[in-house]
Length: 493
Image 1 (tube, rainbow, N blue to C red):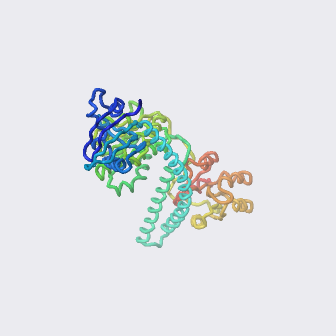
Image 2: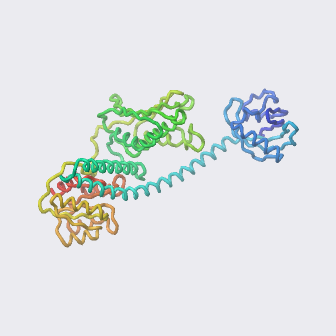
Image 3: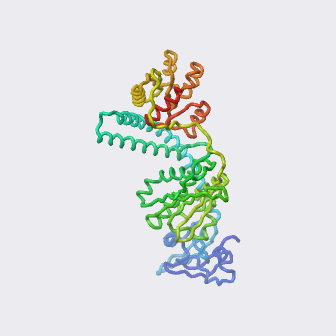
């Protein structure tokens, strides 16, 4: 028989056991020689949730029976067990005690499998939502970067005019600084939410850490969490996928924040890095002053579906994914913690002796340059306000500039007039920048070598591969006019 048999009385305050078979003792962890009267699985202290006992008594007292009633109880050693009860009961006596005859089944393994299946289902739903979110953010970023580029261009132009007073100049500098701040936020969101394939390159770990902390800066500030930057200068680069490393760091930082807030309502997060020359590796430590992780739980923290959070607060997959990513990079991740003394996660990544890989690079040189007299430039941009700002800025710098609102108009302009350089947006209606460039290779191959692209989103997209193959320079929206003029000068030369 694989069912425990229980006969006894259950009352509001106490229970008595009349009969308990050996399998019931096994379910609840009692020794086989334990007297049946001492096996009392329905005492108040045996219920993980005290309210569940009151609900069971009310149900069995009113209906007289329960079938496959799920409840979580404690074994003799206080570990939890999920059981199903099928029972019938007599009418309660005046003191509220009921005589119960019950069959008890241990369904802990089945419940665990059910929970894991539900978690996997929720993970699939979350993955679908994140994919949709990534597409939405990419489109929103492009729409935000265009007006930001327009604001930056006009503010930049106005700030260089001689006939403005100090107050106006300070206001324009504020506009420039806040616009660039908004642009950084958009770039951070794109980095995190973009759906992309694994792409490894030589990366600066400190830079990734600071970008990740910037993503959490607002939440940390309003939650009274202070961040200490103890990142060592001059670290060697590591060969890694920056997006995946950021995913690992976000998981560790958010876990630390939640632990500190739940324990103290505030906290101090320390990000520390250093170079281990003996092991030829770079080590990053993420330390918090939260409640720590009990020693008994530490061997399980990287196990799938294991979580110390409340039900519904975590899936138990975050650290598992982090562990897999670090292992895939040839590194390792480990924990040091003591209960009540905070927790430190250490990520160790191997150092490669190679120099950072060269990819399609954005032209970021600030000083203004002198124009080549009489140079003719075609600006291909679907945003009229931005195109006007760029064309006017080129006129101010001494160039002759025309505007085409899409790739089709641009091809018509190229066929009608000779140009020395083209500044072209990548994402446009009708004929986009990439299709325009391919047509330009046939129509005017010499001009195709003098194209500067501008775009609001490149990394991890088809545009990144295209720019690498074309060899064209590019600028990320929003850009400063000094960057644009320098890119024009280099393109013309």
